[in-house]
Image (cartoon, rainbow, N blue to C red; front, side, top):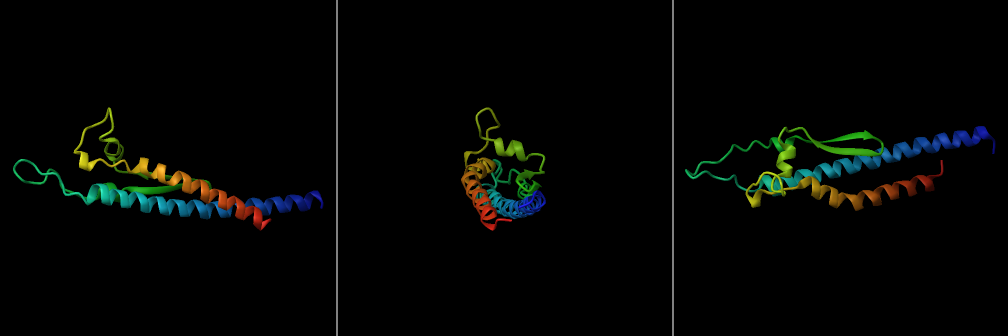
Amino acid sequence: MTAEQIARKMKKREELARKEFQATTRGVAVSAMKFCKEKLTTEIYAIPEDRRKNGKKAWKRTGHLRRSEKFEIRDPYTVAVVNTAAYALPRHEAGKPGHRNINPQRISHWRDDLAETFKPLMDDLYHSTVEAILKAGG
């Protein structure tokens, strides 16, 4: 095999790797987004609003936090779940030691749950992607 043939083969493998990892990363992003929105729905939005002493709701629910949850694919190997709501980080951290106290029924650390749940899943998915690339040859 000549150096030129090896170079072509490596270029082909590089393109295959990028394409496969892009597909895997996009799948992880979509699944992570679904996970976060489900957590927000069950842990925040499914719980009735707190009420004031006079019986009125303490706030008007808008769904802004859930709608602001997005994903960004930063490169073929990296995805980030971000929330564009100005209060997203303080809301996520609420109820943790050293942070704002809230009604314990309202505590939701959806991002922490995402990281804990998706770490082993991502390891398996990316490992399977590498195996698929190696099997495909290129």
